[in-house]
Amino acid sequence: MKWYLAPWKKFAVFTGRARRSEYWTFVLINAIIGAVLNSIPPKVNGQMYSIWYPIFSLIILIPGLAVMVRRLHDTGRSGWNWLWALLPIIGWIVLLVFFVQDSKPGDNEYGPNPKVETN
Image 1 (cartoon, rainbow, N blue to C red):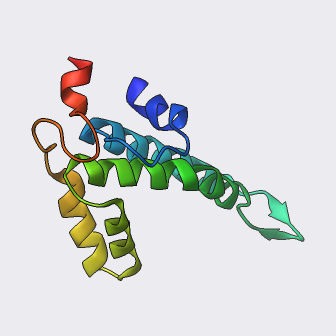
Image 2 (tube, rainbow, N blue to C red):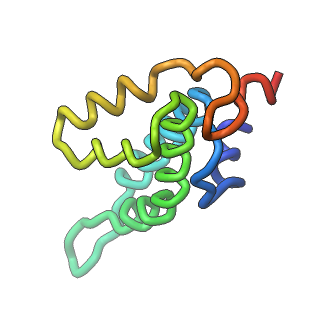
């Protein structure tokens, strides 16, 4: 649970580094919450429409982007690499490869290695 709460504590912090466990726990739990919210739609004007998922998506937008940038920093890349997400399919494959890579050992230009701090 600490890995899920860490991005919320650093809500809009785009500096520093984030471990794989912090990023992937945040993504996994938000996907589960999103699926649950999407499956319980209320009736709006007589039609079934889930208003909760779009609201939840807006709430997690900034912390999600921040943890994504910090994860890219942890692999030694600029946070601007998140722009790969704008390219359909290829961009998401590139980002997936970046996100599953291990941390760059030691300190880098974005800060100290988060693995050393937590051990």
